[in-house]
Amino acid sequence: MTSTPPAVAEFKATHLLDTFERITDQIFVQPSPLNTPLDPSHPATVVIYGWGDALPKHLAKYVSGYRALFPASRLVLIFSPILRALLAGLDARTQSMAPVLDAIYGPAGTATTPEASSRILIQVMSNTGGINYAATLNAHAARHGGAAMPHALLVLDSTPGSTDFFSNIGRWSRALALGAGKLPIPFAVTQAVAAGFLGALSLAGWLVGRTSAADFSVGAVNNPALCDVGVRRVYLYSKADDIIHWEDIEEHMARGREKGYSVGGTLFEGTPHVGHMRAWPEEYWGAIRRGWEDVVKGEKA
Image 1 (spheres, rainbow, N blue to C red):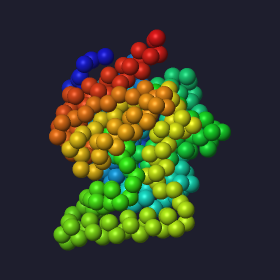
Image 2: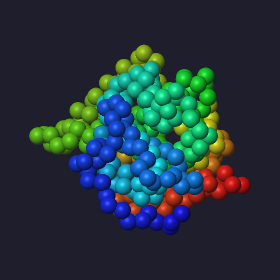
Image 3: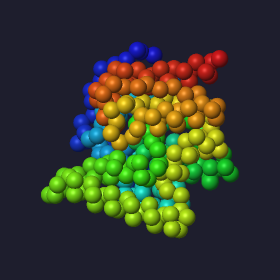
Image 4: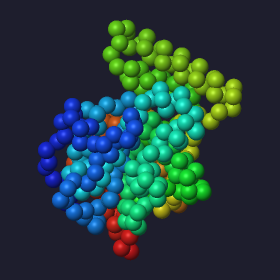
């Protein structure tokens, strides 16, 4: 493998989804390019769970980066509307992510070859991407009698964080307000409304005894029944992240190690939430490349 991604023409953000097949309004698949054989040391499929309310223009550089690293891998792209993730119950989230299994493993929901079942790289971005990833894990377990979903490498960008409501309401409301886009009112007002909405949602969930989407997703990633301990991990994070505390990510890493997961991480300097790739592209893609190389070395050991 090369030490850094080779130079390639970037996908134009406005035409990104023209290169993908639409499965649902959230799930898109880009097949392997014609006449480009898959390198046996590369993943068969790369799955990208975008952060909350990320648009095609936001994810275009990630598609370009993975296409540079792994030219013949299939790409599966999942968009993550914040309100949909927060409002839907576990059953609804699980049902909405079930088509991801078909996109990865084929229409029958099981891999057609041993290579396809194990050579899967999944990238999860922010907690909303994590909510959809956890729903996919749950969909696989429901479809296959409780079996954990097979994949080889999990890249966690700016996630997961703490699920404590009171210590995080400021950060969560800011993320929700940012996802609302530019409104003709002061941002502080938008954030205050978002905080009120999240407070009401949390209270309603508590009253009916419902596990929040955030609680389920953070727990699922360290649950061997859903995420097999054989899945290697790379955490990408920063102390300057104003949405997710770096201490919470390192605590999640430590708990993963205690449960037997192979855990690695890269701490970026001065980068905002899901902003590490833009500021440090060589280091970012290098961390992912090394993570996959560790998978290949493990297979050969």
